Every structure is written in structure tokens, then in C-alpha cells.
Length: 351
Image (cartoon, one colour):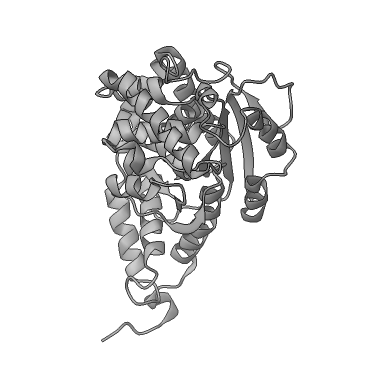
């Protein structure tokens, strides 16, 4: 737990002095003040994260954490758990949605086996950090032990440190794990006091009657583990998945290392919320990329006062929405760093 504790101690807020300078710079660019809207806000925030007036984010990476879930045995997914390992091969063969979008924006894809119930051989592009073969069925017992949860968080922190060593400037967190929308829904209920029917959705495409069953599964797990909900780490252990804990670590590590980090959709938001509960200062560093079409995501984001960048009716996961948002960030920084000021362009400001 030493790495986790050290990371939590080292997370600080954004650089307010640099942000003031960045805002002043934005107001002096050849445009009406505020006319680039959220692009201006993004640029200023990134300056505050990095502590630089003119940051450049050239090397991009998406880290996809993969893990299985014992709760799949309860019939909460339209797909069998074997799809998790099959999709890992698809990622590595460049055949998934995340591969296509990452290629379009110039990002690398790193796949981390943190808890898949399958033994992979050594494969190019696969980081083997398996803690156990899938989380346990949380309708019967805690999904993870405290030790396993901490290990998973620390894997996420380590991936940030490795990325920084390799010159990565901007990183996105993605997920793969059949059954993980059930785990995410549970965490939202436990952390935010929401009701299962407010957040439980179709996941991989459940029919309405199956969604009702999924709600009952969530209700059962909430009742079983309610005594730990005052402790965010125990809550994550009881209800989470290894990939969600890995994402939490990625977001915490990014806060410590002041790396620009993007949160994807429903599952990644569960990881982000877990990180925020462990260290509230983390929220300042996170950029929420898009609104998932998955039921409950909008309500969850409203509860934590987040306005995501995009709403494209997506619910694929994998880091796809976060990867798309990298292009928005490129544009925000291009305007911030490359536009002329009124002085340099010899353009008259308004009277």
C-alpha cells in the first residue's frame, strides 16, 4: 500500500497562477473574449494541470484495463464472459473500435490484463499484470480482497509512471470486461446514494425483462455490503472489478504526475469516482470526455457537477469516447498556442 499512500499524499490542486496567465493570454488572442467557449476553458485547465503556459501534448496513449466479473453467472450480461478474452485478441489484432479511433487521432493503445479469466501467452502490446482470474460474485461475497484492490489500484498508478517515462503527454483510460456495467452501477449507488433503477441499464444490450433482473441483482449486492459504504476503499473492494480499480489508480497517478488524463464513459466514470472518493483533489485533474448512452450516466455526472465534452450517443467503452476527445484537446491547444494576439497581429481591439 506504500505506492498508493504516497500517490494520495502527492496529489495537489491545479496551478492557479499559471491558469490566470493562460486566461489573460486567451483574452488577448485575435477573437472576441470567450468566443471559443469550452475550448478556452480546456486550454486554461490543461495549463493548470501541467503548470505550463504553453503546453504541448504530442504523444498520446489509451490504456485499456481488462478484467472478468463473477457476477456474470447471475445472468446480467447479453454476452458470455469468454468475450472478454476474445476482445483482447481483437484489440491486439487492431480490429476493435478503440483501435480505429486511436489510429485516427494518432494514439497508441496499451492493453492491460489485470484480471481476465484466461491465460494469455506473451503477446506484443499486451501488458500482463493479472491479479486474479476475475472478480468474485459480489452477490455472494466481496468482489475483491482489500489486498487485491490495492494491488489493482497500484497497477494503474504504475502504468502512469511508465507512460511518463516513455514520454506520453496525454492518456485516456478504457475498459473491457463483460459484466462491468453491473459493478459500475453498484459503485454509483453506494458512493452517491442513488437507487438501482436510476443507474442500471442495458449494458451490452439486455432486453427489458433482463434489465429488471439486473436491478434485482444490484439490490441484492447493495443490501449484502451496505455496512462498508462509509469507507471508499472497502466499497471498491466489495463491489468493484479489477479493471475499475486499475482505472482508479490510473486517474490517481495522473493527478500525482500532472499528466493530462481523459475519463471515458460509464465504466471509466466509476473508476474516476472511486479515485475522487479516495482523494477529492483528483477531481480537478480529470477531463470527462463524453456522455455515455448507458442509463444513469447523465445523472451520475450531474451529481458530481461534471459537464462532459461530447454527447455522441456512444456506449461502447474501450476508451473510445476519451480517445475522440483527444482531437478536441488538440484543437484547444492549437488555438491557445498558435493564434496571434491583438498586438502581434496588429489587429484593433474593440472600442
